[in-house]
Amino acid sequence: MSGNTNTDILLAGAIAAFTVDLLVYPLDTIKTRIQSPDYARFYVNTATQKPNPALFRGVYQGVGSVIIATLPSSGAFFTTYERTKALLTRVNPSTAAHPNGLVPTPVLHATASSLAELVSCAILTPAEVIKQNAQMVKAGSPTNATIQTLAKFRSNPLSLWRGYTALAGRNLPFTALQFPMFERLKEGIKEYRKQRGLTRGTIFESGMITAVSAGSAGTIAAVITTPVDVVKTRIMLAAVDDAGKESSSASKSAKAGGSGLVDAFGKSEQKGKKSAWDIGKEIVNEKGLKGLWRGGALRGIWTFVGSGLYLGVYESGRVYLAGRRGEHVNEDELL
Image (cartoon, rainbow, N blue to C red; front, side):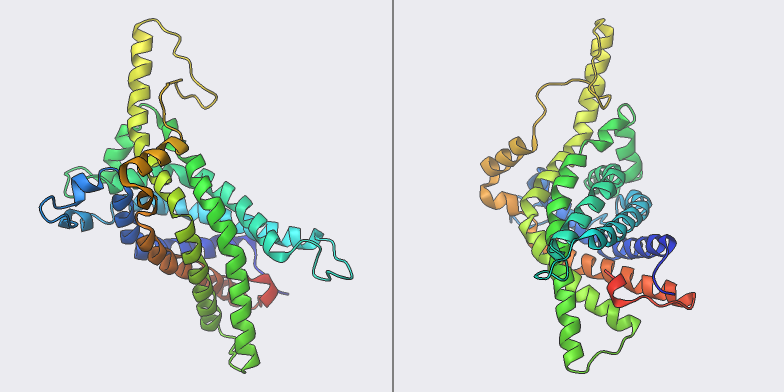
């Protein structure tokens, strides 16, 4: 008997997410602050034009909300990815010219990861909005940064999902790029080690190969998608102001006897909101094209460490959990 149960996949994904959140969260906080429109005002010394100490304070602000949401979202991602990948591989028609299937394997992996990302983003978006706004709260405030942020959404909690499209718009191309590259790199490293008699078959070896492959693929994908990440950060940081404006607009409309019209998501119909395209043009007008790449190097480093740990711990966790039951996970059943 071989393979992992759904519980194994959920637990391995949760452990991986928890590990990454604790270790690389400070880099994510600094990246968010660098990409924010208030970076120069809050985190740069006007005399020297160099980052001031405030940039590095309170780097764990908002981590609680992410840990709570990341556990179910990562479990949902990996469960969807593993099952979708298996299904697509099973139904992929083979021919004499294409014994492994008519549709190329990278396309199957990209499709499975994209579908998994859509499911994951629906769970993760509120936490991402809370996290990024909490990361911008001035360090040392008497009230917890997450609580301060949540209070701003009390009047319009649906605004917490305002960044779903932006988050999915960043994560979909990221995962569609990362996973095919990751699978190919991992296969290449394993083949290289096998040909030279270096294969040991240990959990540590499997985890390290996965970590290096995932980190390398993730870094390339992260750098390429940095402009989308910068726009996503701006949209999520603006969600607090949007929630306040909508609440104020609805209150004024009610006092004036207005209809208080809302859209399909229960949001008030407020004109003047900026689209992702408008925000992108605004960034270019302010900082030039280089403004769209702000934080790219840091994001590449963060992703190398984060993706490597995330998928490395996830795969090692799957092997370990199956091993505890006396079962074995075959090579083709891993990521």
